[in-house]
Image (tube, rainbow, N blue to C red; front, side, top):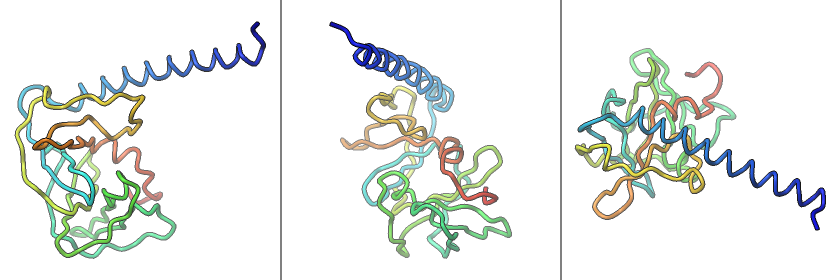
Length: 182
């Protein structure tokens, strides 16, 4: 026998399935919009735990690790601000943003300066591996049910291990960078 409580739970489950379907459609559209047709190039980097790929078109330059100024009350994955030729550029700790574990900066680290919609963003990485040529078919879509990260474009194979393909525009728009910094 159905009760009002079980009816509400069934309706919630139905709504959740529909939300998941809509998110999946949006994720597919983002993937199709951001991953170029044909051949493209990706900068491959490593954080403490993960291999990540960033579309080369979104990268302005790669700098050796340098001093960044901390911002009070910023999230732990927000490394600070870098003065880059008089422009204040927010810098994210990519390991902290992805894995939730802050990275202790080392002299061998790099800061990848990305440009999205006229805004610069620095990403601290442990290592810059190199550039790889890829095509859209090399990037596998990730189910919204498994991963809800808005800045994950998909996953690709890097020598038998997964490589996370990141969306710089989504990183910029979803990173809750302290007011007035970006």
